[in-house]
Length: 113
Image 1: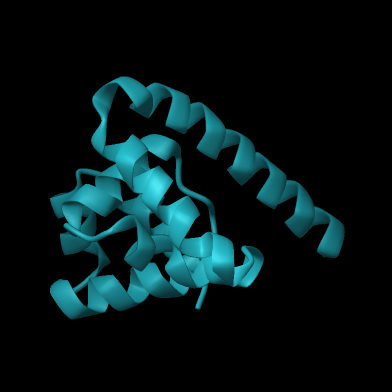
Image 2: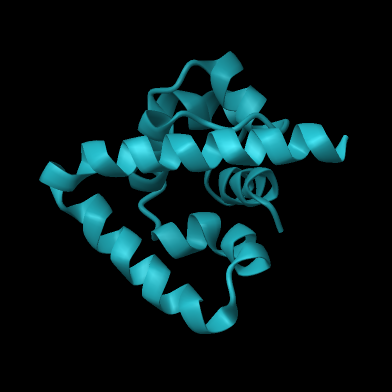
């Protein structure tokens, strides 16, 4: 399951439609809908989604990470990311790192297309 599928699943479990989810997450409707259609969210919106749905990082990105991270490293990496997300002074550093990862993922998608 990729990020988009996970987002749709979470929305389907908690809201009537994408409009309600976007409103609750304080993300513009068209922006939210684009995430369900495959666009990568901004770091700020990743945090809004995680906090708005009140879910763990693993639940949001677990299926995606399990596809690209060696199983032994999965728990270690998720644990470190969870600590960083919960620590406000590290959020900006995390945002920069996630931006780089998302940019790299977009480049990989373009090469595969």
